[in-house]
Image (cartoon, rainbow over all chains, first blue to last red):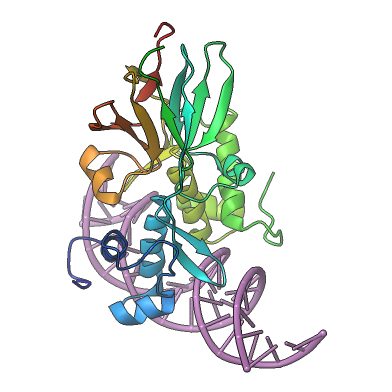
Length: 138
Length: 138
DNA sequence: GTACATTTGTGCGTATGTATG
DNA sequence: TCATACATACGCACAAATGTA
């Protein structure tokens, strides 16, 4: 599978699809580094912007993490600690704002969980580290 | 508040911060259109790429929605329908992949909720339309 | 400690395509 | 038809971070 510049599908989307497939197939394992932008530019015979936008897509999906001066890594599936959703509570998921993301040291593409307990108190949790549970019955 | 090209903070981040502040302060109301790229480019005296990347940040945060040939709109806070997290079930939040996002017709910057019931069956819900709840009496 | 190569980040210019009004 | 505006994509240049010789 390669890039088709004449396709109606944007080149950068094709790049994202190619790389995502390589990650999901296990060709690129968690923790490994993606080929550099220059490498992908050459291999696919496309411009750097298309490569960068493709990578940006995967970053927004939380699949990879990019380190300046080093490269883009496949994010490891974290162990999720189980957190009990309190009785009478509720939760919504959303993307953090820039400041929130910085303050919580979240990677791109990682949502936050806004958990409200029955009193109305709110806790913000990183969605990539948490699995919310509800016990069977007590 | 304006743009400082000599700041260590990237210009496009400053753009995102400025626009986010205008949205959160109520200067830009839900449903209203952001200034055009050309306008922001002129007003801030910066390049188009910086403007586009700043806008892209807010899109990834789910704050705005961009319509080609028209502009970028401030997303309205949706009514969230309450969905009960089943007893013995659990939920994680993550960003959808490209195909998932397309299939569910989700805007950028909208996470999905992966709800598992006690049998292990999984349901995928759009996180911007749903508030998960747990009733008081178990 | 310095110098260098590699890699990503940022910014600008240009061009073409497409959708809207 | 025409102007406006966003989407995509190429090129180039330099800055900043990283790792290594």
